[in-house]
Length: 371
Image (cartoon, rainbow, N blue to C red; front, side, top):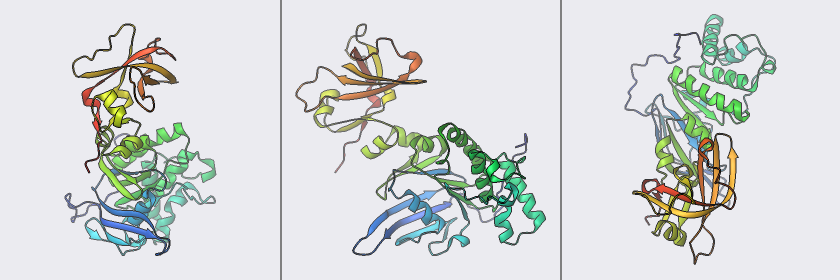
C-alpha cells in the first residue's frame, strides 16, 4: 500500500446507524437430521456484532462455529430464530441477497486465470463493465499488498499470497460483512502469524465488519476486538479478548481459551484454603528458589512448596510443571504449571528440585457453579 494512500471500500450510506448492530442473531437454533436422529448444531444463540468490528467465533471441532457462520451467510437456514444484517431481517434470504461475502479455508482460485482475473471474476458475472472491474480489482489488490502481482497465476504464488488473492476477491464486491472460515488454517505457523498481523491491518483499512471462525485460541486473541466461545452449539461467553482470557465465565472457557490450573474439591481446599472450583493462569504463578525464599506468603500472595516435575524450554518462555508438597490425604497429587520468561528462569529450576510457587490473590478466578 503506498504511504498515505489508505483506501476504504465502504460506500457512504445515509441509512447507517451506529446503534444498530451490523449482525444480530436472536434465539437462533439449527437442527440437522430428523426426529429419529436429530442433531442440534446451534442452540439459542443470541449475538450482536457491531459495524466495523473484527469478531471471532471460537470453539473446538464440532462446537457449531462453522454452522453459525453459514447461518449468517445464508448457506444454512435456521430451524428457529431471527437473523438480521444492518437491522434488516434476512432470515429467509439466500446468500446472493445478503450484503456479505465469504472466504473459505480452501481458496478455490481459478488456476488458469491470472490474479487480476480471479479478483475480477465476481464483478464480471454481475455484469460490471471492464474499466470498472479493472479499477476495483486493482484497488482491492493494493489493499492486500499484491498490486505488483496482477499478471501471475495462482501456482506462481505462495500460500500467503494465494490467501490474500482470495481476500481481495471477496472484498472487491464491497460487502458490508466479510465472513472468514478458518482463513489461515492451511498456512504454516510462521506464515500464519504474519498473516494475522496483515489481516488485522487490512480490516482496519477497509473498515468493514470481519467475522472469523477459528479453533485456534491464540489466533482469536491476536486478531479480534471481541469473540464468542462456543461449546456443543451453545454460547459459553461473549466479550473482549482480554475479558474472556482474564475473566473466564466458567471452567470450559478457562480450559479452552489458553491454559489454566484448575483446582476443585479437596485440592482447592488444600492449596487455596477454600472449597469450590478455581483457576489460575500459569503466567500469574511465580517460581522461586526454595533454598533462598521462605514459604510464607507476602502480603496479598499465597505460596506453596513444590517439587519440579518437568521443565520445558520453548524459546522465549519456559514452562514448569511442579507437584505441590506438604499436602496429605488427597487421592492424587496436585500438579501446577507456571510459565515464565526464559531469561528469568533460575538454574535452580531443574527436575526434582524444591521450589516455592507464589501467586497474588487477585490471580485466582472463582469458577464455582452457582446452581
